[in-house]
Amino acid sequence: MKKSKLFAFFSACLIGLLLISFQVAVYAQKHPSELRKPDPIKMTPPVAEKFEVGQGIKVNFLEDNELPLVNLSAYFKGGSLSDPGDKIGLASLMATVMRSGGTAKMSGDEIDGELSFLPAPLGVGAGEEIFSASFQCLKRHLPRVLEIFKDIVTSPAFVQEKLDLARDQWKERMKTRWDSPQTAKTLIFNELLVGYEEERMANPRTLNNISRKDLVEIHQKYFVPNNMSIVIGGDIAVSEAKKELNKVFKDWRPRKVTFLPLPKLEDKSRPKVYYAYKDIPQAHILLGHYVDITRDHPDMEKLGILSSVLGGGLSSRLSEEIRVKRGWTYGISGYVGAARANGSFRIDSALKAESLGEALTIIKNIVKGMQTELITDEELERTKDSRIYGSVFQYNNPLNIVAGQVLRKIQGRPPFDDSKRLEKIRAVTKEDVLALAKKYIHLDKLMFVIVGDKKKFDKPLEEFGEVVELSLEELKKKDLAENGKKEETKQTIKKDN
Image (cartoon, rainbow, N blue to C red):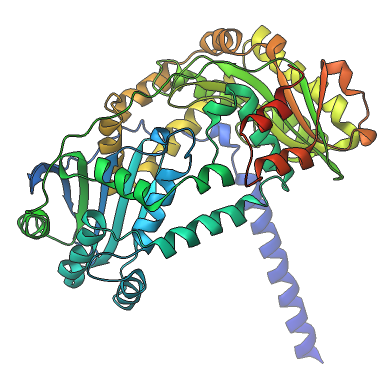
């Protein structure tokens, strides 16, 4: 009995000591604002070795012996922005069938089987301005994988059966794009922002216009050695890389390439409320307007600070008010962004339907506050630190950095200097953010796209502007029709403008 009491006593003492130690540790914790800031960082991008192989193929090389792997990506100027207006989807279909349709030497299924056995994932893709083809393999398999890769890039078979399959699969995926309120509102907003023709969205009619001959022609136009840039890296010496690349590409003949000018988009939006009924508990909203700015504008780094403070994460003003304090949404974002030819201001969320009107009023007031008062010192410093120190994660893959440099050059964009970018971020002031909010955000130009059930809303939509009602079923029906003119969809959305 005495031993058990003694054991209980010491156990209680030990637990007490642990609790005291835990409390001391907790109270010894410092608030993040009291911690010493890390030393300033400076980004030093990797320097690739540059050379040419074959007949005009540009190569960027980085050696990395950490793993016995080789990674290769090839880029070609071109892409979906060059699709003819009645054949939108051509570039993407060409890339898909280029990979699946096999070559003059092997069928697509035979290629899949061999690459799966090695293993060596290999893909082909099409972006707006760039075609790409890439693979990864063990070093010992490089000669064979590179031979298959060369055949796919230079002599794809474009089997009709694979074209039909890819087209049918795309059509099947299209059938669901109007069913998601998130996707539906984005489709409507983008179309209203720059117009139907410029939005360039594939549909069954444009896909039906694409023939095997079209795939062959677009491949022959852009897939030539003098339009090819390779980024290769991994467990391979530069001399070996040159030898293997020259071996497979030495007989590939160059041809002249002509590129179509890419048009600048214009503002087609109107400050109205576009409402589409859907029986859902939320109100999916996307509001904003066109912004005359492109991705390489000098203001973009400053706009990144503005966007982060306004709606870039849980600590942003929009998230703090709408999600944290009121619990009306699982997430909300707001930003001024830019693409190749245009920019836009957007606020995107799915809100509690019964609080929609009040939420929209608060959102507008938050945006107005960005234009009338300076942001706080804490907001500015927190956002700067997040963007500066978050940049280190961009440097975990040197080969991706080199690829980014190559892509910018192909696109005709200025070289990217991360050190200068960090200097620009550090130099941003509260006055800069206020001036940019006044310059790029215009509450009188707001276009609202709202998907939901207005019977559940707490305020009539007319309080926020002229209401134009849309039918998701009608939009879906005309968008997915196998025959008919594309103009029908344009009229469905814009008839009241």
